[in-house]
Amino acid sequence: MISLKLIDESNWEDCIELKPKQEQEVFIASNLYSIAESKFFPNLEIKAIYYEEKMIGFAMYGLDSDDGNYWIYRFMIDERFQGRGYGKSAMKLVIQDIESREDRTDVIWLGYHVNNEQGRKLYASLGFQEAGIADWGEMLAKYSFR
Image (tube, rainbow, N blue to C red; front, side):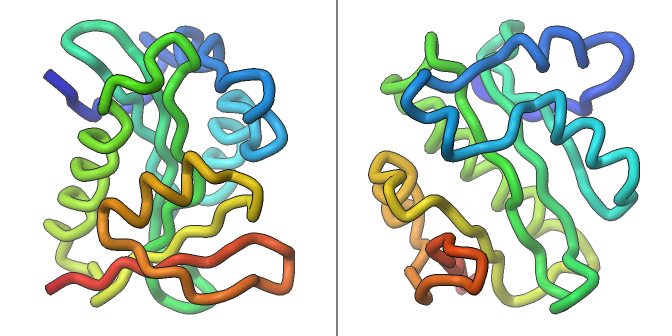
């Protein structure tokens, strides 16, 4: 039911229409910004999250050139599809995609706004362990492959 698909000329406009809840907008850059950013950093993967044939979310992740680890830089589910378990299923697919890569590292990192309680609960439920506040103010969390 949940799948990840590449974002390309056929679906990018659908992707930029996806929005988090209004109170969540301070937690994440827009999908349009993220797609543009990915064009300047070729190590970033951008994927649309689908429920059956309907695009419901967005993920951006890749190998960080500074520390050599995989990072999940963006992850969002459209406001209309939140609270149904799709985010957890989609994040599992992102983790599996990273795990399957030949260049994968032993951990995945992500950062989230310290007030993003919904995100914190989601990431913790998947095995991400909080590692402290980054210099830029986000909570860092680490997922270790077992």
